[in-house]
Length: 212
View 1 (cartoon, rainbow, N blue to C red):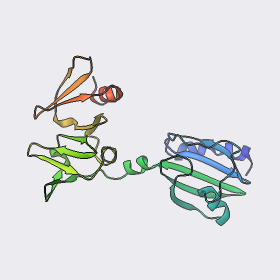
View 2: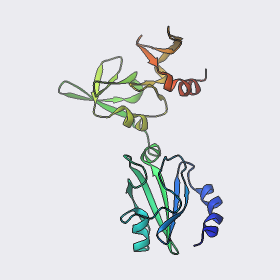
View 3: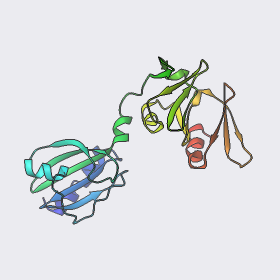
View 4: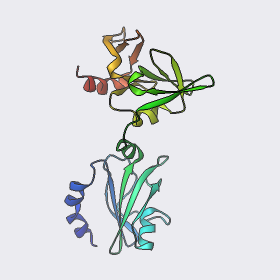
C-alpha cells in the first residue's frame, strides 16, 4: 500500500474510529503515516518498526493482533489493535482510560473499617479523598478506606462524580453551596458541612460541569 493509498483511507478512518484513537501505518519496515488522536504518542514518519512491537507482530504473522502495548507511550500502557495490509500494518491505539470509560460505571464501592468490609452504593458517597498514599471515602454514616486510587476511581465512577482537586473527588449531588475563598478560588460546601477546595487546575472543568 503506497502512502497515497493510505491517505485515501484517512477520511474513512476518521469517520468510524473514535476521535481519541491514534493511528499508525507501517510499510516496508518504517512508519509512513501517524495521527496522534488524544494520545501523546511518540511516532515519527520514517521511524523504523521495532522488533516485537505490535506492528512488527502483524507484519510477521499476517494476522490481526490485539494486546496492551507500551511501545508508543513512555511509562504508560494503552490498548492496540493491529491489522495486516499489503506490505505492512495499520495499528490503532486507544488509551487504557478510554477503554475503561466504555465499561459500565461501578454501582458500589467496598470500604473497610478496621477488620470489616462494607459494600456502599456510590450514591451514598459524599466525597473521596487521597491522603498519605491511602484512599478514603465518606458517607453520612462513616468513613471507609478503599484499595482503589483516585486515578482509578475517576475512570470507574459514574459522571455524577467530579474531580475537584488532585486529592478529592466529589459527588455532585451532595454539593450544597459553591463559594469563593480568600484566594479567589472556590470552596464546595457539602450537605454534611464538609468544605472541599477546588484547585486552580480543576477550576475550568468544575465550572463547565456545574454550569457557572
